[in-house]
Length: 83
Image (cartoon, rainbow, N blue to C red; front, side, top):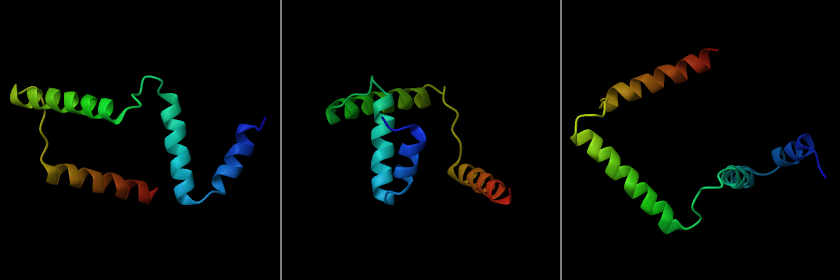
């Protein structure tokens, strides 16, 4: 059986799209409760969206202006680049 280091070396030699597919498959393998059916995924997202909309309507969600969010993201990225 190959070691994690050997697998990592081989994986890093893959193309970008092959690595992305591998990452997707590995992450999916960690979540045993993840629904395999697209309809189940859609239903889960629909429920989450409904819950979030209800929170907004009830005044329980903190709404942040998009310009503020974008500015914060730009500042975080700039800080990372400066390191």
